[in-house]
Image (cartoon, rainbow, N blue to C red; front, side, top):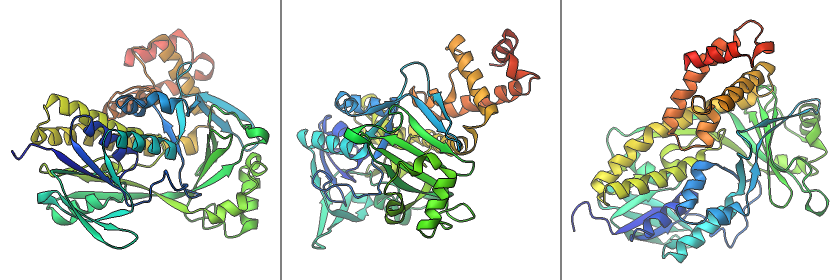
Length: 449
């Protein structure tokens, strides 16, 4: 067997990206085995306070379509056609995401993962649960796993190992400690998050608009809510770790009650278990992780969050990981399954795009937190939407480039900066509030594209 011929693949991590990757690989004739440190979620309920919501957009759907499960998931996903902004006075403002009928879709993380694991097994992938990766011999693609219940060790040999084991990847750690000049960085933002719940109303009714992503922007922090099939909404509070308005400042029931009635008054009566959930559910950190290289010879490769964890404010973490799989699949076609060429091409194609979406996610956090309720920002977006409707081939808003297209993230980032420069000039035009839709403004924009 040549150095570049791959027959057997071990995937560390049976989460969303690992499961999708396994299906792509097994359908190409590879013998694939997955090892997951957690129990089988198909047999155990997801613990309260853990993320159960996803926002599927075009890149994610493309990944699911590639293995034939998009329509099954679409049946149990809820379209969200825009942001529903909640003011402190209870006023609601709806901001469409794109053109008519364009939507991102709220879906259950657990349901999606279970569907993909089922499909993987149907295609011949073997999955072992409660197996924690403790070591990888990089030169021989030999992985060691420890069985949770007994501590028994298993050594697995294969031709190639994929690390799909998330932001704090054991596979990536092996590259950090065992290779020279491995670049790694992690950056925590000053905010953490906590998941809360708005339960369904009588007979499973939705107590807020079902087909929207709800946001309570408060300048410096925010609350968001996504719909669930049972009529409930999973809410996520993003709040500074410390300071006057922070998780640290909320120490008891009265602090929590005072904070929500003052800052999010229209949610307090919708959350009967708020006080319990706030203190019982874990507080999670938000980290961006970058590294390079992603591949070691033809023996180990990183994919998904193991290669590029990002903060969740563009809803692209899973979508980006799924795009890793579709791009890799396309490269495998091009390179005729020659892994000496596949892995370098995969790494080159995805690294700059992963860095770009990390930057976009951070900037969208600032936008969602501070700007979406600002009249000047809303006018700016209205002008952009107006120009897009009149000249769709010349102006595609950045959000649409990221969410409703497969334009490379790096190109979308570059385009977005160019659009920002143009719109900065437009917003300085005297009287822009009254003539934003005039031919004069339109011509100014077109002359700068």
